[in-house]
Structures are given as C-alpha cells and as structure tokens.
Length: 468
Figure 1 (cartoon, helix red, strand yellow):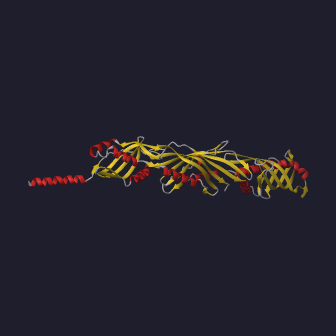
Figure 2: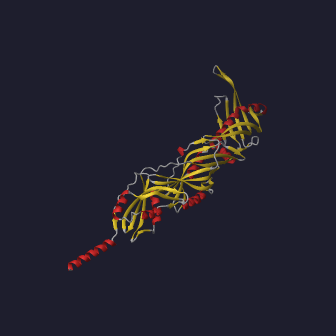
Figure 3: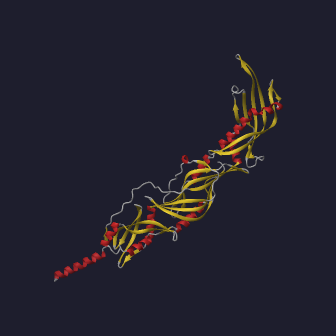
C-alpha cells in the first residue's frame, strides 16, 4: 500500500512536470537559394537636364583663353606672311541684333603687325620686298551656334573692321598711312581671326566636365528618410540633348537623362555613377511630362526586422495553449518567400511558412498568397502540436504577415517632394520638379531582396546654371 502511494505520487509529479514544461519543436530549415548579385528588371525613367549658360559666362571664358598675344605666325617662308595679333581690350559677346536669338556678335579690339613679302627667288638670289603693316582697330564678327559632341561650336564670319588709328606701313623707318591699301587686304588675316574665335569658344564651351560633375553629385545616393533609412539612388544610362538655343542673353540647352531610379532601405548604398559609360545622343525634343519608375529595394534582413515588429506583443492561443513570436526571418526559395518564426510558449522552436508575396491596391498592403506551413513543419506539428497546425492559428498568423506600405508611399512622396524643392547637391546645380500620385506597379523577388516597383508621374528638372 505504501509502495502504491509512492508510485501514485511519482506519477502525479511526472504529469505536472510534463504539463508545465514546454515542448521542444525540432524542424528542418528550408535553406535559402544560393546568394547571387542583386539583379532585377528595371524600367528606366527620364530626368530633364535644362542647362542655362549666360553669354557673360562665354565672354569670361573666351577672354580668359584669348589674352594678350592671341595669334602668332612667325614663319614667313610658308606663305610670305608673318603675323602677330594682340587683344587690346576685353572681348564683348552679345546677342546679334541683326539676327536676334539666332547668332551671337563678338566685338574684338585688336592690334596687329603683319609682314607681307613680295618677290621671288631665282638662281639662288632672293629678290624680295618685305613690308610691315601696323593695324589698330575693332573687329565685329557674327557666329552661328550648334552643339556637337558636348561642345558649343560656332561658325564665325568676319563682319566689319573699324580703325582706331589709320593703318600704317613702315617706309624707310617711317610710318605711312595706307588705309586705302589695307581695307581691300583685310582678307589676309580675317580667316585667322575667325578661326581663333571659333577655337576659343569651342575650348571654353566644353560642357562635358560640367555636366558630368553635376550628374555625379545628383547620382550620389540621397537619404530621403531617417526613420526608414531609405535612400534614393539614380543610375544614369544615356544622356539626350537637343541643339542649343539662344534666347536674350543666354543659351538654353535641353538635355535629358535616361536612368534607373532606386529606393534602397538600409545602410547608404554605393554610387553607380560611371562617367566613362555616359553616352550623349542628339534628339529633336525632350519630353516635359515623365513617368519615373522607382525600384524600392528592401533586403530580406531589413524586411525581417519590420515583420518582427509586426508580431511584437501578440499571442496566438488555442484553449490553454499559447505562443508568442520573438523573431522573424524571411528569405527567398524556389520563387516563394520562406517565413521563419521563432516561437516561445507552450511550444519552443522555429516554424517555417511559405507563400507568394502580392499587393492589395485597396488596402495598399503587401501580403502572402497561399501562406502555409512548409511540408516538414506541417508534418511535425501534426505529430506534436496539432493545435498549432490548425487553420485558425495559421490564418491569425497570416494577418500579421501583412505589411501596409501606405505610410511608406506617403512618406516616400513627402521625402521625394523635399528632393524636388530646389535641392542643390553642388553650387550652380538645382533639382526641382513636381509629382502626381504614387502608384504601386509590381513586386519582384530576387535572392537578396524584395523589389517593389512604384510609378510616379510628374517632372524632374536638374538645372545647371552657368559654367564654374
């Protein structure tokens, strides 16, 4: 009898211990797909790049390049002419009133010394007469303008020459006025002047360094939100350009950048700007209204943190049995999302679910279609914790496996709007624009991240003001 009492007590204690101790669930982990580079189908966007260059900028650059002695031909043997030309005062460049908004007028004060040789060489005897002319006047030139291979090119034509002093020629060491002789002979050096002006403007108006420098700054990842640690990254593909247009006192150059726009969640991403890969293509017109396609990239690590927060403070119960989810990890496998839930309570361990991510446009939520336990987890639950394998518990978990992106869309719109309000990544470069409603497009899975594609209609302008 005493033995029976001890046995009964031992049995009761064993039952109590078994009831109070949580069951340990051992499940097989579905391994993620092998890691590979983050590759996804991108839809390019177009950003307008209006460039404004004032004629005063061109004037300053031209004066810097053409200073003092601007032409020097000291060899008289090749064409019987030796010529030196000096700039006497700053060059003036303005809209040509004779051809407004079509040509530019250049006013060049100069002095020139020209040695002109007449004669021949016979039987080794030089029979030459060399005369030296001194010119001091103001030349007016008119130039057509075009954009070729990043450079502003001019086709300059000599228009007039007004003398400050009458042209002279050295005769027996004395200066003799020869205006009546020199006016017909201006053709000797006018082509030299035209060429010098064209070369100086082409050299000073090379837009490529300025545009690429501006693009490099614009393409540097820009932090849009501290809360979500979201970054906007622009990856350029091609640059389009219309021809340069002259309007009043400035040149207008419409350019457009075909690019991929990405929103990346997490630490600051690296810039993907590569100047060597930028190609300039001529087009007739750059569209004003554009559709920006932004790829919102959430790595599985970052998405797992968000899902963990969604489960915080929730209990999943059936009768007296209950569990809480302490941690969530998600990854990609065979075209599906695997969701690993670390659970504590009546059962301790990790359960694995999988499903297809989808988007509900009405609630603006990402959810998982056909969410179910993976085969091994389902089998083990049926043997050890059938209550957890019930459809009711699974549906409750499914509700927590939804993620509303409405706040993200609104926050993203707010943050992008700040980027479009005179944002200046460097002096002389300004980003402006406007946008309409943000629309969700599609979801794509990669081995490393969930890519949500968002469409934004509106305009984005990156203006480059002047040449620095």
